[in-house]
Image 1 (cartoon, rainbow, N blue to C red):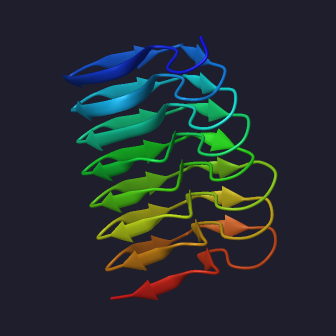
Image 2 (image 1 turned 60 degrees about the vertical axis):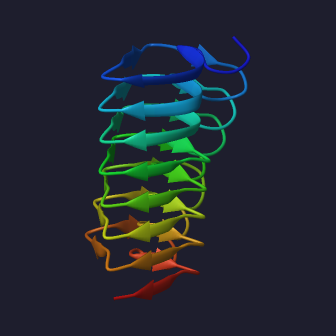
Image 3 (image 1 turned 120 degrees about the vertical axis):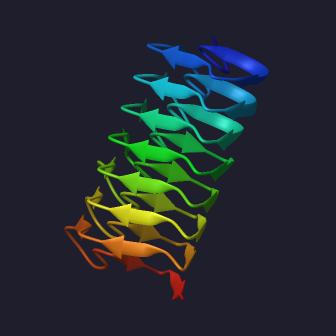
Length: 168
């Protein structure tokens, strides 16, 4: 499947997508809006292992993988969701996101930057225990407001955050 290995252009409540693959991203879902759904163990051979271009509300995105950006998800907005145990070369948890009240933990950027989130805007989130090979263990190239950032790690600079705006 080119986009959305599990589904594409879907709107739903309480869905589950597992063990799906997509060539251009969105292993679990490409484009849509989901509430209280689970995305687990999906692969996006480009961008967004779990989801790509999806609005998530109260969802769990766990153990997904991407070959480029956003192991958990890419290019979406999220509220009250969890991103955990995802991995990608860039942005292990999420890439290009606006996130509100989300938990981002135990994600991995295997080759470079942004263990938790890269190029994201975070409000009231918790970013912890993420890892990046070079910089930005928690956040890379993003903005975090009223966000708890703790116990992240990077081999290079900025274990908590790198090239980021942090304010409370």
